[in-house]
Amino acid sequence: MVLELHVWGPAFGLPSLDPECLATIAFFTQALDRSEWTIVRSSPSAVPTRRLPTLHNPLTSTWTSSLPSIISHLHLHPPSTFHSPDLPLSPSALAKSTAYVSHLSTSAAPLLSLSLYASTANWTSATRPAYSAALPFPLGWTEVSAVRRSWLALADATGVDLLDAEDADRPTQAKEEGEEMGLPKDVKLPPKRKGVRDLLTPEQKARIRLQNLVRQTMAVLQDLKGGKKWFLTTEEGGGPTTLDCVAFGYLALMICPDLPRPWLRDAIVKDYPGLQAFVGDMTALCFGDGLPTATEARKEDGALAVTRRFVDGVVRNIPGLGEEWRRVRDLGLRWGDVLALAGGSVVAAVLLGMYVLHKKGLVFMPILGAPVHRWEAPRRGLAGFGAAGALFGGLLAPEVRFGSPAGGVGPGQSGSVKTEMQAPFGGKADGVEVEVDVDVE
Image (cartoon, rainbow, N blue to C red; front, side, top):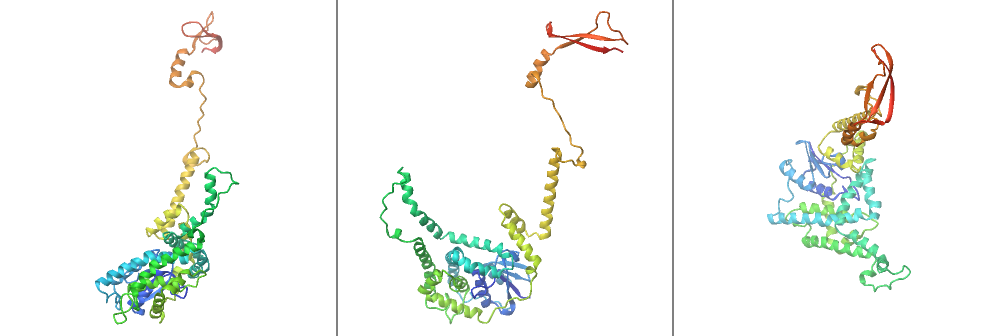
């Protein structure tokens, strides 16, 4: 069985629109025979690791993401035709390769993010349509936004957006200073003398900042490459290495796309023509004979699977609920288990709510018995003052004495009993007399 390399789909005349996917494809063309691997156009929601590139090895039933992990997997489980492109390198050259790969991930990735993702014109006219074409409908509504957010996080580290925001607020600085001094609104401060920086537009300031970023990244690569065809080896000493594959992934997406604002491509073509030639050489070597691409239909692209992937993406983007959903899905639970868990939670919540309403008398549930109602008359007099009121109330309670009138009322007779409500220590309680008719049996 052949290895399955899951990557983002093609765009801009390249086999993938992601730099790490491009680097992994280039690595496979140099490390394996084309009969032992195939490209599967995919998206993060279609693979268990939720990240691309991902290598699926049917022999070991494993899924491995990221280029370094994939290379390690190939060394641990090498196919019959596997040969490492880094084999001719010396230990010092291998250490240098590791350092420059790290340099590309920290410097070239933010540049690419500014060009393809942070620029509104480039994003709307080129990058987003490329992702929409690579994804089945309607996954473009859920997955593309997550991809752009991750790339914009890299662009924020460059400080270019912050610089533009500061420049945009600068015209109101004089007005704010006048208000702080307590001057009337109709009094204007004299304009300050402008320096060279103040004469530049925000776009010009941002362009200067971008040119500095390009120089810091590309000059290092150009110095390493020099006049060689590859970065670490000569034509006699070998072909492309892992560093060449990683550099190609970034440089190709900086040069090949046709963008409305091609500031990055213009800078590389003008000042670093050797890097442009390197992209052409790698493209001809790695992709000149075509690539092994899977063409058969997959169950992950079926209507039911796409619907589940879409629902999963919608829930992941719900504030509050999305984070909990990601934790559940990252545990590796299948959809049946997730639905059973969610259904059980809903039923438990409904039963709890019905019980609370039953106790409040708003809903009658025979299985829980009739609701209990309790009426309590308001306390009057001294009884309303708690224990102290009860104490004094006992002392001041009227004494009721039943006595018979003259002649008495004997057993079996009826008559009236006159009672006197006497206050303690003698006397009548407010002079009240009560007559009660009683029948004595």
